Each structure stands twice: as C-alpha cells, then as structure tokens.
Length: 197
Image (cartoon, rainbow, N blue to C red; front, top):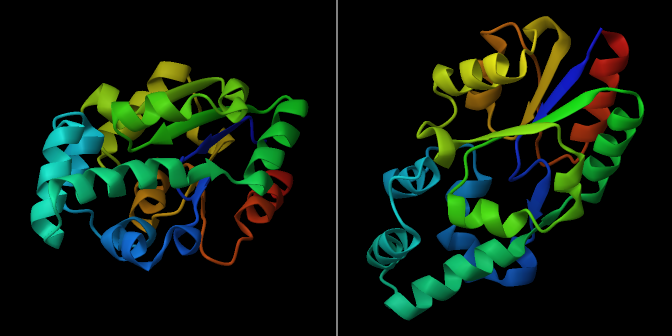
C-alpha cells in the first residue's frame, strides 16, 4: 500500500513555458528540459555553493551575453515556473486520501524562496531541497536524507521526477518511480501506480 508520494519540482510540480517566453530563453536553458547533465555551475547553484550573481556571470560567458542580458534571462526563467494544474490536482487527490506528499528537488535557495508563494506548497508534508543539504540528485545521500528524516518506507513510497537518472537512483532504494515526460501523462501514471500497489 502506498502511503507517500515524493515529487520533484521543476518539470513535475512546476512547469516552464519556453515557447511563451521566446526561442532565445529556450536555447539558453535547453539543458533544463533535456535529459542531460546540467552545466557544472548550475548544479553548484542548486547545491547552494554558488550565488545567483556567480551563476549569472558564468551564463553570460557561456552564451556570449552581456551581464544585464544574462541577469534578465535568469529572472525570466524564474518567472516561467508556474504550477502544473494536473499535478496540483493529483496532490490534492492524494492528500484527500490520506497519502502524504513530499518535495525532493534540486533547486537553489533563491529560486525556492520565490516559489514558496504558490499555494501548492501548503499541501506538502515536508521537503528536502538540494541547496539546504549541499547535495544534488541523483547522489544517493539525498534519498537517504528524505527517507530517514520523514521515516518513509521505500516500498510504501512513489517518487515522480522528470529526469530518468533521478528516478533510477530512487529505484535502487526500492522506491517505486514515475518518470514524467513530454506526453503529459505523468499524473495519470502516478494514479495508476498508487492504485495498483
């Protein structure tokens, strides 16, 4: 029986509309939507070891942007993050059934603080975020942290993420997983898995 569902944020709880924000922004942050390695500096940003100013400067160098343009692009990326209605509906359904919901996300402190304004965050029973722990998914340590901190039994837990490396790492602990993709059926696959187990 599933008692817990853990959600990644970007690409699962929060979506990014790159088309609405323009082709240039989509090209700059293509690594976020692709199943690929993040640039080292962005991973360090998520880990809490680089500041937003440092990352902005490195982004400018990487894409031959002015510092002002790079700053604007980072800000627009932040503003592009909005709750995905289908996932928010799923979380509300799970909560109504007595299933606990948690966050496990690679995210910087600056971004996370801004996103807490969304009402969906009131639904979560706990969160483990990379910048606080100084470790990113798919490092096994971050999975150990969330399981231990909240007393979660892997066989009673589902983890939803949009990066296959992250769901594969979770599955090594015996956690059931769903990898969100561009089909938009992630919430339904979580429902099916919860109903089946």
